[in-house]
Image (cartoon, rainbow, N blue to C red; front, side, top):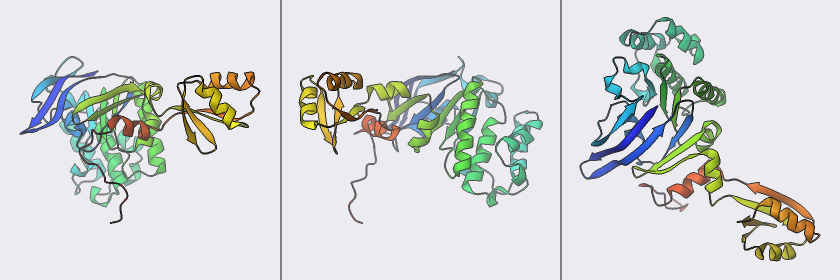
Length: 304
């Protein structure tokens, strides 16, 4: 378990992380999200002591990361795959890591197989595609069989097969009781793998919810209804104090459940063509929650 207590980081007059309190639990895949400049990378670096907090603490199973004699076996990370030494082969890179961290060298071949790099193990990193570098970064994070894994933008450069592999890997690691933290701008991938979503903006915690809780709380959720007599249907729903908005040939209905709309239709002999609960995508939820909390915002679709 990783616990952030009042975690704060100031750079001169800029507060990158602002009194962040958060617990990251084992056995859970947590999507760690935020706009550019939100403080995500700074937070991840503070967890592994690459950046020292101005105020607050990070506790890993009750102790500071640097207090462990072999901290690499507590948390494995993929923060910056570009930091790999391009003159080394994948096998040489993992050998150096394993030797320095006192890890059984048999783990090298295991990691090469798990990440699909076995046939490229003797090629230099400089010849690798971005996706291959990502795979090597994941191998580096996992080689110590750590209790927790932090991966920053792990989907970058991966093909469809690689993305599916990562999805399965995250689920398996969480199933083994590991704490899995994944940061990405690819909302669809986070939605596919995360059990829980944490969103920060301008260094502050904006949301800490399971995906189901986020769907339930979102203003973007609604019931779509389409019937043979839309005028009568609209009037009946409005009488129930529901919020209505036209959407194509049908209606968006909020504050009234689908089963209640179905009963109204039955009682008033309406024929329903369509009645369904519409849940927003994680991208829509993210936009809703971070509105006004981004440091860098595009100014629409003007021609350039």
